[in-house]
Image (cartoon, rainbow, N blue to C red):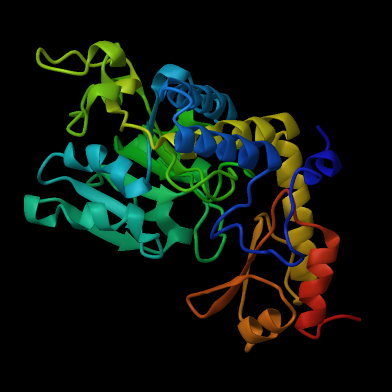
Length: 347
């Protein structure tokens, strides 16, 4: 599907430049969710079709990140899904994290300090340089939330491999616009309500089988069973043999909206979305007097930007005192022009 065709499936008010906060739903996702809510309201169906949407979304996400569906677990939030990983880190481990990291991938590690886990924070741009023989685990975002900075994955993974360190990547600000290969990391986590255009409350954890063997499924419930429908009551422990053993019971209606949203991303293609997003971002960067970048997110010091943009109906964000504008599948040149004019940068 071409970008122009896909854009007809969205109904944004002009000037939405804040996908880094949350993405907008395509019509198929919105309609599927409304139908499920109506069925729930009237008691027309069992919950099983809603559960099937979770399996559909898992399969599509696996294809989007080049992983096997058997290595993908489902959950709701980054910190929640990372909880199993973090709790399995041995006391005395040394963890390296960017100092700018969004706290969902920082607080869980810091909370382990009382258990002897040492956390060191360093500048994101120089993360690979700080990986040494004493580093046991490197946790980082593929795209930084505040700035849109794209991590040097090659350098970080190479440094971690040389040190024998585990890699845990947060792909929340990447999946949906930046090509991602989840198999490069020991664990990769992402929630779907931003660039994957889904309702809040759905997310994925991808783990390598050999790494997953080290994890204790401490949050497992019936949904993590080998056969969920035969796992309602009583012992013995009978968890799935693959990544489903780390599943968290799904928020049904959010998954009903997630499956068609991911299918649209797949139909358009992450490569095409990447080129579209970065082109618009670089058009905005040029108006700001910045050099071209490689991100769908633009961060810049523009005094009074929040008020100027709001006055013109442009919705962006301010993070760390900097304007943050983010461009996605439904963004257009008109949206860029609206923002440029609002900031008084038009020619």
